[in-house]
Length: 227
Image 1 (cartoon, rainbow, N blue to C red):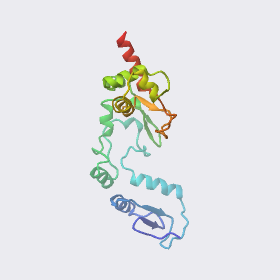
Image 2 (cartoon, rainbow, N blue to C red):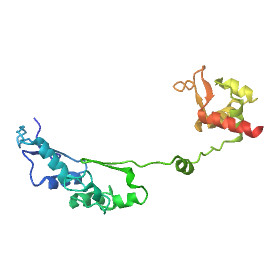
Image 3 (cartoon, rainbow, N blue to C red):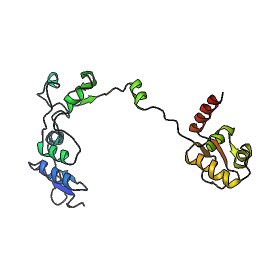
Image 4 (cartoon, helix red, strand yellow):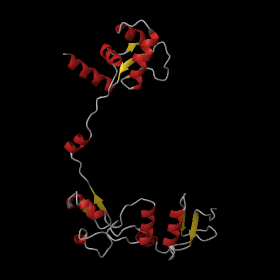
């Protein structure tokens, strides 16, 4: 049987101090759980109107008046002004912990950028769909070509499928294995231009290397420049 603690609260029925208890849990770093329909001894008691109490709880701790449109509010008036915090004490706490920036200014700020067609108003909820223009997205996220050393650039150009270390070194006409590892192979791996075919066994004698997607793109770009 569960007992009450500083993080668990039992209530036999819905009471007037619901908001106060909710605020207390919000101020507690690890939060808390409130059970309604359980007495102080941990026994389950009958609740006459469970669905009604659920709606009351939702209504009383809802942060703003437009989380769902309550009865009596005309949908035609939704855009007329700023929303009004229903529970100002809860909203103050959310603002203090920087979960919201301004009180009741969300709808007007959204409407400065998006049209009313982005809002779908239902009796029990509001859905907002914000479009993203492909041209704008591509403009603000340009593709950046990674900078590579001349040695790595040479390595990229000699790659043909999966290659052993010795095959790559021979194609580059390099005799010094340590020089090849430090100036060619390792920088290419660190830049994710090439990858191992057996990554879980880096020292395997069967280990081969291949170009990644990034490496393939760089190779095509370098080849075009050489033509």
